[in-house]
Length: 166
Image (cartoon, rainbow, N blue to C red; front, side):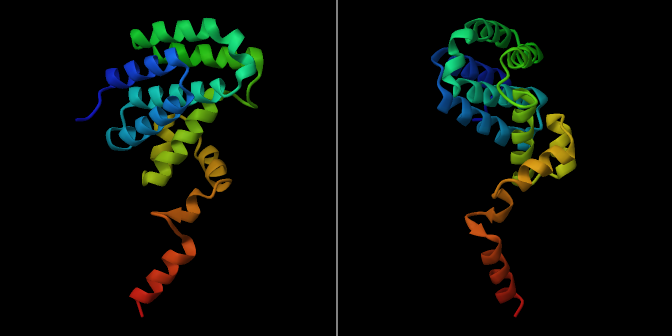
């Protein structure tokens, strides 16, 4: 059974309540995989929010300052105000300086790169997550993702192709 946007939002709220960083990361990946098929803007936003919270929760020294943003996020998620949650996260990031740039943009780029590696065109992936194509390319180029597909390196895939055409 496919999950709905409301299911993902509920799961995100539960993970936030438990401060479960592992589930937040996992949920972000699930949303990315679902968005690959549905291209649902709201599911994409939930995935971005989930990844952003995951990254912030990893920085334990900021937990004391985080209670207000966390409570506001749970309320806004309940009414589907995903843009409001992202704005709160951006403002929190501006105040406390987690990342160069901002945590929401980093989450969007990560999600865009994952969509791209799943098979969406670069332009479609960038458009869906609202970042520049160059941002995704820069991120993907710095990872080893493009080197591995289905557990095989580029060299292994090339060797297989050569064998097929011999």
